[in-house]
Image (tube, rainbow, N blue to C red):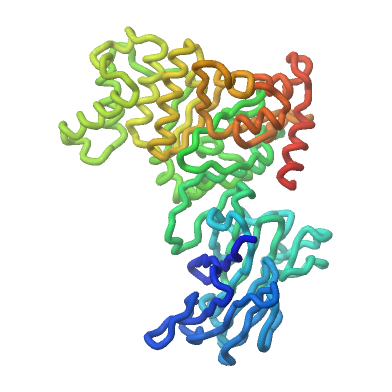
Length: 488
C-alpha cells in the first residue's frame, strides 16, 4: 500500500508531505526542537502532535494542551484514528482571521502530486468555481445541497441543506472544498480534469491547460455542453468529431475569443475568462487559422521578420537580435533555403509551414492550429506534424490541432513502415440528440480506438455520425459511455 499523504491547508499556502515514517511529529521547528512536519501559524506549539501507525491503523496523538484540535470538526482530547480523507484542524482560540486555523487532510491519493488548488475569497465571483450541484447562493450566503449521499460534509453524507460554516470540509467525487473565515480553498484531483488555479504561494507554477466548458450557447442553441479535460505541457492534442460537433467553437472558447456563457478555463494558473488576466494569457497563445493570411508579394524572410516585429519580442529593435529570431524560426520550420523566395512561389506545404512560423515567432507556450494539414500531400503533412510534435515535446509546449486529415492512427496503421503517432491525446466531440456538441472521449489515440471498438481514428467518425451522413448514429451511446467511465 502506498504511503499516506498530508495536505496542510493554510490561508495562503498548501504544503504537501508524504509520510515515509510510521512516527511523524508535527508542530513548529525551532532552535531547540525539530519536527517532521512544520506547520504555519505563530500559535502552533513546538510539538503539537504525532501521526503514527499502530496495529495497522493510523492515529493522531495529541502532545499539547494549548490549542484545540478537531477531527472532522469534532474536538478530540488525546488521540483519534485517522481514515482516508479525514481532516485535522488546529485552531488559535482567538480565531479572528484566516491565519488562525490550519487544517491537514489525511489521504491515500495515488496522484497527489498532480492535484490542483484554488484559493478564493467569498465573493460573487466564487460562483464560477463551485459545483452548482453542490452549492447554491441564498440571501447572500452559500448553502450546501442535500444530494442524497453524493456529497460528504465533514466525512458524513450531507443530509439537509445548510449554510457552509467555518472549518467545513465538503467533498464530492474527487473535489474537496475547505472553508475558512473569508476564503474557500478548493482541491481537484487530476482525474477530475477540471480547471483550477494553484494556491497562492504555491512553489511550483502549474503550466497545464484545464478546460471545463459548462455551456456555450448562440441564441437558443446550445453549441457545447460539459466539455472538460486537462492538457499537460509537452503534449500534442488532436481534436476530432462529427460535422458541426463544435471543434472550432471549442477552440475559440478556450482561447477566449468567443467566450462560453458558463466556463472555467485556466492556463498557467491564469483564468482566461478573467478580463484582468486575459491580456497576459493572450501573449502566450499562438493561433494558425485554416486559411493562410500571407502577403504573396513578400519574401519568406520578410514575412517572418514582420511577424517578429509585431510580436514585440525582447530587444527586437536590435537588428542582430531580430535576425536571430528570424533565422531560428526558419530553421525550426525547414525554410532556410526558401527565405528569399516570394510567398507566391511556395508550395502548399511551404505556405502552411510559413503560416505556422508566423505564429511560432511569438514564442507561444500554447499553440492552436485549425486544419493545418488540409490540402497537403502525405509528405508535407508528415513534415509539418513532425515539426509540431517536436515543438510540443522538445520545447515543453502545448499544441492543439483540429484536423479531419490526421486520422491515420490506431492498430490498423501501426505495422506500416512509416507509421508515426504524433499525438499524445485526442479529444472526440459528438453531437447528442439535441444537436449539442459533447465530449465523447478524451485520452490517448490507442485508448480511443479501444473505447470505440475501431481499428483507426478515422473509423471513430463513422461510428458517431448520424445515418443520414453515412454513420452508425452511436454518438449518444458513446457520450453516455464516456461519462459513465468518468463517474459522471
